[in-house]
Image 1: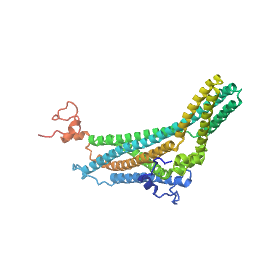
Image 2 (image 1 turned 90 degrees about the horizontal axis):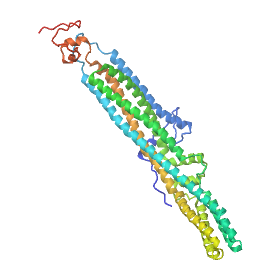
Image 3 (image 1 turned 180 degrees about the vertical axis):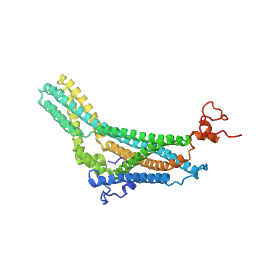
Image 4 (image 1 turned 120 degrees about the vertical axis):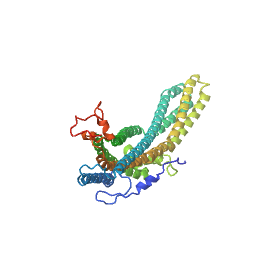
Length: 460
């Protein structure tokens, strides 16, 4: 039996798996995936806490910068109209930071899509495995019921018809015993029947969680896109109120970006530990949840030459019993039908049942082979450990770019604010082109501005 193509850990998995881990006491923690152990949980929480530390440092830096800008700025001489030096650089640095944030949004949309594709592949593999297991149970149940019905009706009728010939009755009873053997052996092939763990339920739970995760990230991406667009609009229109609103929203998105970064980092590290060697953990967890023997689980999860088919003996016995039934029915048809014409109808019905049973048996042999379920297992691992992990890394990059861009923009907005022209009535007297839109409707620019105190008409 050749093993089908399986899962191979990617370079990202190897790289993340090699990162050092420590608990809350900064003691080294093994990188093996053990979510039930407290030390390993502390190691992942410590990875997430690094993002919280980054958030605190960025907020402290922004606060110190703003306090220094507001309190330590040298006073301007009265009546000075000279623009502050470096104003254009400040404005453009803010714009470049926001554009970098927009690039991060594009990366975030791609990462969210990749993660969603990986989870969808995982769900599809679980659904296909559930279909295979359900098909095995259905075929076993249908075949056993057909054989039981044949034993109760056709074989009983045949024995009654052949009662005058004891040797023919013995052959019919031999076919009955062989049919009972087949039914008994087939019942042991429905290994997933009565198991509390359902791949369908797992797929539904995964899809439910993924739906809310996808929605949360889309809302975060749209919120940051809104912040970038309205901040650029506020700078273009030189609207101070719009900049104030966007500053508050930028702080909110900054906190959310660092929070999502911590969640993504911890998830990526834990996922890399799982994906580096998933077989032992999956085998142990499935055995605990299902109670199945390790031979059956190893056969389907590993599917290699070292693990034999645990159902091979049952399949061999069933095949031999079906062959014996077939030969016995042929003998009865030759010997009994010429003497007992009424035996032909139950014999034909038994042959039809035997043909259906043999067809179901060959389908069971194909479904019980490890290739199908192991292929689903490999597809689930590839979706989770390749696409989903890659998407998480892109989301991590998005969060990092967003946090850096928003922090830079928050530091640049106050300096850009100081460069905005004044919006007050005295600006109407300057005669500059910037003040013209502030004139009341219908007012001639050359007329005396008697309604505004402090404005005097300039001599021509």
